[in-house]
Image (cartoon, rainbow, N blue to C red):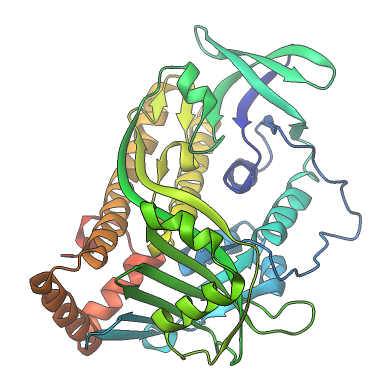
Length: 417
């Protein structure tokens, strides 16, 4: 191969593809970009991305701020065809008096957020990206070695045709929380184990959700129920994230469907009527992790490889998308001024611009998780008083909602959780 790229992205998932689209947009197609992905890419469709809703489809919550980014990338008009609007968010603490309800009308937004199936989001991103002639996909392939050079990095790739090599002014590592590239480069992670496991599944419900997302805190752990579009049979359904102490998660995974639904019904209540069906369950351990280095000369770490958050507040992908858009703007502006895409001062400027957002979002997610996982009576009383105050105060509620939606960023948005 022996090709020079401005930017090579290791990882063609939702974060990597979004970054490539943002780089293309902000540089007006002037950057030479490669995306290396380990999975084979689906055939490019001449009629646009395809979509067949499935009951068991995994999904992602998009904040209102993420919608604004996708609008700027001219993708939202396609994405919105298959999203479920989050019109309300109801937060409650099982067995206690505290609760809060947030509604999109209070902020004069069309929705507080959106839930989208990962397959649809991925298909839309790839379908748009692969039409740009300045972007090359190398798939299935992986980056096996990285050799720093004077003004770029040399990359050894393992592809279908065998080993090959190329170089790039900027390598973006977006290959997930257990990044093999980060390990090989000696980029270490700070990890805070929550001793919790999330069980993910889709739930069919008797009553329609009406665009309401539920955050329910229970003695067995936080429960999130996010609105989904009906499945192919028109069945109303919600996406469940149920967090268990890690010692209890194996038992929950082995419950029969009937037992699982009965236990969930008891903890969640009847806000959606009877819970009728549970889909395929998936479990994964929860931890807060941060890469100790996010930038080096010619290298940036992004997405879950850079920061992996607890899913209870739905912040992970939305933060990564804001990072990607900020990096793309910095790199495009630098190259337009004759600088290299991997110039260390450019990458440090990007990190400084995102540092506060990353820190505040991480604290927001972490403190929310720990606050509602603690069942001590004194803290429980304080927590419920806080929910009552949140529900009663429009300024505090608006501030909380804007923080969660990623619309307003900065130290002034840090909440006293």
